[in-house]
Image (cartoon, rainbow, N blue to C red; front, side):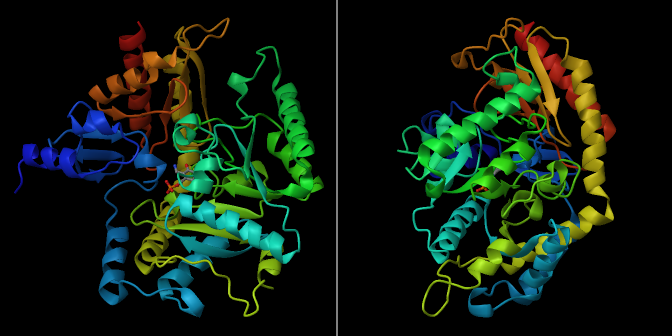
Length: 456
Ligand code: PMP
């Protein structure tokens, strides 16, 4: 057996980690943690340290760690048939069953699901489907995509462009020209703190209308948004937002892509965010919660309206030239089938809503009065604490102080994993749906303790 020191050395020498400070890590100056196991909402590292995972990995291990039924389904599928592709009408029982299960849960107007591997590739697929759709309809100019600042839609070239966060653009020559951004529906950071929620929604809609007028509706194909802003800060939309945005999009014949990579399969306490907020999207992106990350799998759910056009095809032979080797991978599909069945059997969508509400209540009680807490907000099993230098007048900390990261570091020392969201001092929590009431209370208590330790 390798010693911890040996593994740590190989890690620094050979492993190119995603979203990591490369130089610091290689020099051994950045945190390094090797995870070995987990059960429920708790993970264990190689030193035997147990940590309550308040972010469910990257908000993906929705059913919690150590689910034997999903592991068994994966093993059984691997033994029987580890792989066959899904091109040209091929399929497997697992993939077909999962497609059926996804469509039973999706909003009624959706028609088919295309399976990929990650949230990023599913969003790349969505953009290609939107372009293909407009080419079939003979509108080659209608191609631009509207995304929101602070949206997160992936790390690819198009998806990284749609992501509206500096870190993902700077130094990568992004965003690409086809992507245009509009203001984030982020009430706490509204331009004028005197604005009411209704006035802020009206302002966002006016901004969207102005952008469409500037660019020309006949050049804009789609609008992409997460029902609740995720990585950009865990921000539920202001009242009336989605209703008003959908009205604008419909008027300009602009498709709506609901990126439900985080919100799909229960995180808001509803099966989909689309149902939660009354969205009628043309495409829905799914990933994370589809398999609870027991195996990589994602999907693009396509509406009947789009399907009817796509099915006509553009090429002479009618084949759509878009596929991944691993589309609908049977092991991912088997994990998905077992995961969705488990969510139903344990009532985890309802649990996410109920325990998530308790987490939000406890958090507001534990930290809401602290002078450096500007806002506690959440929806379902999502909760965010926004830290400010001063509440009134609202003043944010300088990014170079890294206050959010310091608080998250202090929480970790007390055994709770939270995430410092990448833009602003925002403590993010998105635990597994199996979180107990006691664990929710512990997270709130540790957050309060950490904030006091860092900020007094
Ligand atoms: N969309 C959203 C809303 C996400 O949160 C993420 C990942 N955090 C993605 C897309 C990209 O998914 P992946 O990392 O699997 O490519």
